[in-house]
Image (cartoon, rainbow, N blue to C red):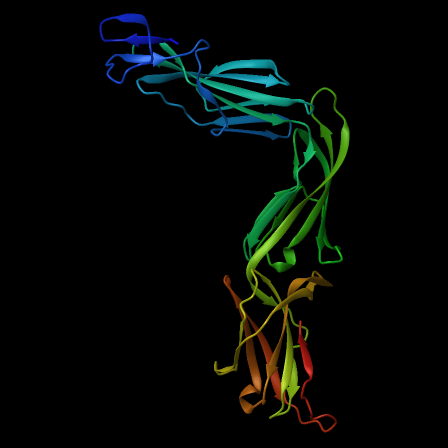
Length: 349
């Protein structure tokens, strides 16, 4: 089988019919096929998107040894029918007023001019996108104290008219917040911001056959960070010499480390042990509501309460992203009605 090669030297131009090139050729040659295209179509260096009713395309520059870029030939297809062709030296292209009912394909071919005045077609870049409005759920993970902003994840060509949001949190899917803005902007997020944000959007389609539609989608926000101990009891009465059991409820993504530390007001360790956390439903107070969320639970057995425990103490729980310190105060209980605290459980939840 033979290939046609276009070869040049310094003083003359010639066409030769030959077998595949030998590495010993010293002539400058350009190999081309019948359609004058090179390689397979590429989409890695093309970015195509739809913003409302406008199609936007960006691509990276192409180079060829011994040749300079003349222009890019850009062809736009609507459902495989060519609707536009332009030649440009820019690295972008946009088209306003596209319809909401089609699949659009963009073909970008770099056109080069070489030192011997010949033209050379570079590798074609191809990318397609659907303009049909489609719900496209989004999943976002952020670290505690980061900021996040998101819109209703509906892809395609459309014009929003009205957006309503519901922030759903907890095992019972409780609505804790609502929004009517197109953009939800959260600053310095915490575990209270995690959950599902369901949006209902009313919009009009783009193009000649405009219609009003309603669609629902959602954004799921996950939060990573140090553990969090949510407390309903910060002061506990104790009797010296007695034993005490504390039940500890923790929210932690990633999971908490097994070591729990309690330091007294002088910074001395009065408790440092390896404990076992179990997963389950724990309470979280968020936006004026008490919710049940995924978390971890353990029990701390505090033996032989001494004077070192009296006063303010810090319970410290950690994971690989940091630690959380919760303040709890023990006071010397001197009541006569019940001085036996052995085995009594206090909830730190």
